[in-house]
Length: 217
Image 1 (cartoon, rainbow, N blue to C red):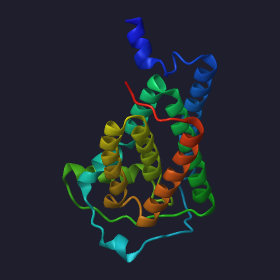
Image 2 (image 1 turned 180 degrees about the horizontal axis):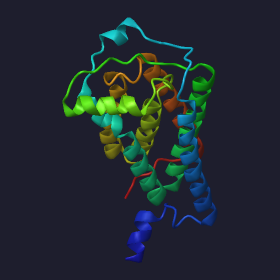
Image 3 (image 1 turned 90 degrees about the vertical axis):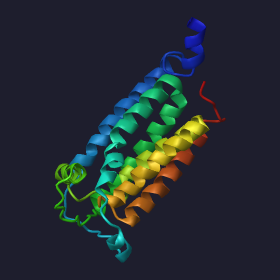
Image 4 (image 1 turned 90 degrees about the horizontal axis):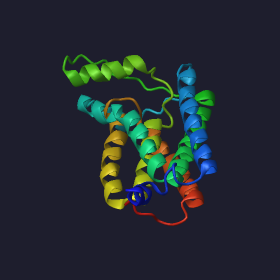
């Protein structure tokens, strides 16, 4: 039993030494407090409005509120599993996310952006869920899209850890990314720059912390 646990969790927080564990826990705290800065910046006035005619052509598809609202559980579940199973993946993902957050916060502070949301009149459960998203999040902090960058960082790490599972989760991540447009929380430019940030940050920290491919047991 002990050998089985060590085989599964041997590269996780309980088997990689107190220094590594302490660094991982400090990163967990840093991720939480960094995420809280979002609300402090979520106000106008806006400097940028990156709307294009193509954005106008994209319809509202309320059912996509499901993947949109799944971001937080996706982050929590992924980071907990990485912490337990592979601390290097946890550390890399946390550092990439923190980097993307602060770059995004720089835009939100100096070049605040906004999205003009549609007026929804539907009474179905998904339309109401989209309205709840609007009620809980001001139409600012849009460029770049954090939903896009954070979810993509997680997907990249999953692919590196376990390719079959990573591909499946990448498909869900794709739904999260598309949902930012289909629930009218972001414009195309927000999404594209969010993707660029995610790939850049993930490349940097996986190269630094994850020196060779690993396969989850």
